[in-house]
Length: 257
Image (cartoon, rainbow, N blue to C red; front, side, top):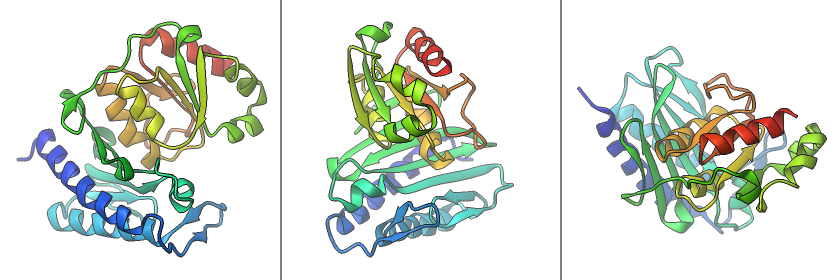
């Protein structure tokens, strides 16, 4: 019977070949199309997910798979893999290197393994439930920052927050000692590695936040929705990551206001 460590080993192997495949497309001719919601998709998104699905179907035929580009198979199964083949397609298609590869393994809907791969940076962040988080095999730990006024805050999807929650946006751009506008998974990885202290994110899908969740939590950080509730397959896509409980509480008070 496979352990969570065994699943993690498979996940790391998948991240390796998925990253190589993504690099093969990067800054090439991508054949970009736009979905009904105006979000872009390239042949790289579809190609990488197809490779990952083929591996999972061969090695874990009884597991479900939920991928951004090809949907859900086996949604009622106990174990499921969740995939975002190119997290940050807009970065990818514009030649910006901060796109990611996200992979998670869920047991009854609860993430047990999370991968944040950064193909262009040759970085792989791994979270294993109960066993900590690593970057390229070395242990990582979130910071001990407890005061938002002294912290480094990243604001993801700022224009969407501004459009839907202008009062929250107005408070966010005054928060923190240092703040940056950003996108996609890498800010959460930076938090897990102790480089930044907090991330406010918005309009995410389960394949965006569930793999990230394990990495953040196993590094010592906290990640929930804006109401402080645990992230699940049914969360609304509003996400707060923080290095410490004290910082997390301050962020929740800010977004609630």
